Image (cartoon, rainbow, N blue to C red):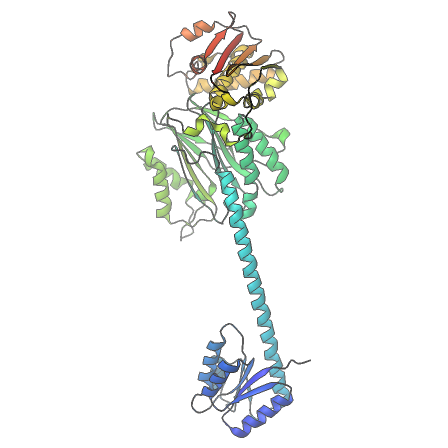
Length: 568
């Protein structure tokens, strides 16, 4: 059934106005009338009718002016105006529509056509009301989504930035295309004075691209804090992303394992643009090329976690970037591209300003960000940040105090375990139960790492550190290490832990034994130390960091002790 409408009739002719009002009332509508345009505007403001029948030519204010004012008063609401006119010239009819009219009807009025036009205008009103309602609903839902995303981003940022991105030797710029960044930057101080840095770039943009970042960040920080190796962390991240991500999603990434103390950089690049190692000594630029598939693509059984190993020295710089930097476009639709980046690097005369030079080049290029963009610089300073001493404090085991007890344990790793397992995280979990030792846990991890590496590499595998005289020898050493480990069919490393409490005092003793031929420990310690050599530092460091360092005469068992005093 046609709906009853409130209709304003503006007609200066009394007879025409009365006749038209009678026709419209007879059709079931409510009618208010005006004798000129000014009255029509006043009545509309007071009565807010749903439709207007407007004579074009009236005294005081004509229908054209009145129609314009009524449209302004109506705002977003659709109030159809049907012009009543005896005009026949095309220009006059066009003027009716330009003034805000939605239709017109010629005099004399045909009641059937008039009702059909009124109902047609009413359908337009209902259509617009539906559109406005849906617009408001979409706006409300969009605001809800933005609020939820902001809350999610606050949580995400706390997880993703839980490490040492604020360290003085790290500079970075990230420009997300959406609220969430598809690029992910993680950095953490690992035990033994190392630093892990991971730059990732998920497929896509915004929230979908950031979903995988949460478990990735949790795995990265959790395993780093517990002392897992970079290889193990990478394998676990890949396995988790392979499990949770849809087939079309993956994460291009570069993982840096930095040990300035040992002069070692280990790099894994899967799908990101080349990063660079910028050598301070000779201004050499070594590319960190992608040699692997992205994370989340391969199954765990076929995943390649092999790192490239490079020498590292104080003053060197590492530069990482995501493809968003290279794919930035200017107003002429030109890519920033790798050649422009290399040109900036060639023109740079001071490595300390390279990061700023690249940013300035991007600004000058006036690139439009078509992708999430990340640029990262890690400088090799000699002084570690404060977090390096206590990386495990980021993951406390609870507030309950644990008193040290008298206990000992021993475990032995044979060839299969030596190839695939890392005993250090499990060992650290045990030692974290000893409350007085927690503040020294980083130091203990460093010593334990050196003891285990010495037993495995020099005892079981019979490798010679003197190979590591230069960068080429350094790479050869680790290639040979892997080959010997793969071929290993006999041998062992045994780790024994003893904890002894004596009132408020106590000690931890660590003994590491291996199946090798043994060596003259004292002779190795007495050798002249050469800072330019890339090996031979471990035994001196063990002696410096522990309270007591002693060994069996045949050099097959090394012992260290850590003491505590005065703890209740």
